[in-house]
Amino acid sequence: MNLDYIFRRRSIRKYTDKPATDRQIKYILEAAMAAPSAHNFKPWRFIVIRDRETLDRIARVHPHARMLFQAPLGIVICGDISISPERWDQDCAAVTENILLALPIRRRVDRVSPAQR
Ligand SMILES: Cc1cc2nc3c(=O)[nH]c(=O)nc-3n(C[C@H](O)[C@H](O)[C@H](O)COP(=O)(O)O)c2cc1C
Image (tube, rainbow, N blue to C red; front, side, top):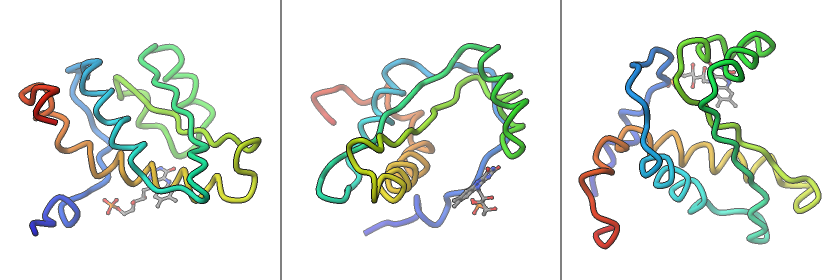
């Protein structure tokens, strides 16, 4: 089994202007939601942000998210505490890792038909 995609994962904080397609984002979110969750509650919610002003506003208030000033897109991962008050944070960590591992392959998504997925 080739685990290179795990060993090659890196935090990237510089971005190109090329926008992600809806199809790429959908595929990434599907990969996210393939994560395990406590009691299978799946308490995650996602907010996909493309709006420049909204990304800039988050970058201004979040001291560790300055890279959003350059990023063309952000995904806010939210945990619904009414669904999983005890384990939402662990479940959201699992979906986050899935997203991080899925991102490097997003360029290949548009070459794969839905039937092949
Ligand atoms: C729980 C957690 C929170 C993190 N928060 C931030 C963050 O707010 N801003 C950021 O730029 N990186 C953040 N990171 C990324 C780490 O800085 C990064 O994973 C670490 O420096 C190792 O680098 P690598 O991801 O390239 O291996 C976070 C990582 C984890 C696991």
